[in-house]
Length: 449
Image 1 (tube, rainbow, N blue to C red):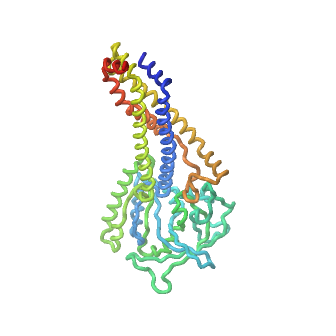
Image 2: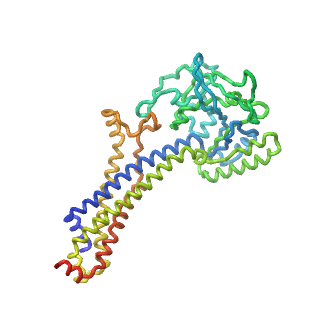
Image 3: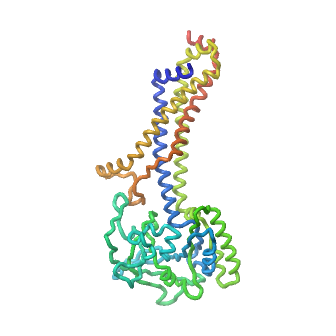
């Protein structure tokens, strides 16, 4: 019983213990808030990239693309683990509104909107045709016009909270899209005055992927029009990529490996053809590897934060060590009395370790409760700050987020709480052991001096 009575007495009588509780509570509060927000941002960003790319991508970095893809698409049709796929044309060009002189550099993606919506999250990114993505290129009140889907940031300006205004029907905008087509050998497909291909398209919808560069620079065109624009049609048709979605239950690793094997067999079957060299430039990657250059910077930031919080934990351990060193230094008489009545070294150590555990539990509970309460109100507080002081934690014109992530993950919260309790026990370990190994005669003699 004394093992619990003494720790509770020390907790209530020694004010310095509140310093240790405060240190743990602040540490837990900061880690819970920052890690929850950062984990939410990284998770949301990864999910947006996953929706944009699909599960697996067969692609070439070359602007020329690759040929002989029709037979491979037929093989994908037969593969039981493949749910859907979408051939894609990619390239770069210039966008200009008629009767203006300003040309804007853009990235062009040619797709079949229905197939692409089945393989990726393209359909969910649309506004006017979300419920019927197969008609994404259908222009309002212009049935014969070539439609194009424009990245939302190219068409609209967001408000302070990354919300975009849309009229009830799409506006009437025409765009001249030009590019420099290449032949299968990488040279200009045309010479002379007609070196540039230009076609007129009309705005049919916009795409909000949530990825800043995509929403600012991307223009989606019908697959056949893009293939003609880039001169990838003709006798030997070419594409830039194939986006693939796997059946439910098929792991990303297994599915990608199966596609890679199928592609290698396809390459071997076509190695004697004229443009088989283009097939050697094609890679088969899962979405994480395909979008690694985009995702990696945020993941590195998350790793750096984890390292900083580890250092914060070391500081907390040091604070607990100092507090317990001071407490035990003032409790030598209690230790001597306990030893003189036969209390063992391990029991003395146990008293102070229980004391440390109580401090850790209380501090972690206060910090976790405060962090959860703060997260639940974080967006309301940011709204109030913006309304009264025009201040935001993240400028929505730079960061493509809506509300601040505030989801509280129980497993992460449990790890943080257990880590805080462990830090408290670790900080108290050395002073507790020193108290336990003291001899009663030495302790009491010192007390009497």
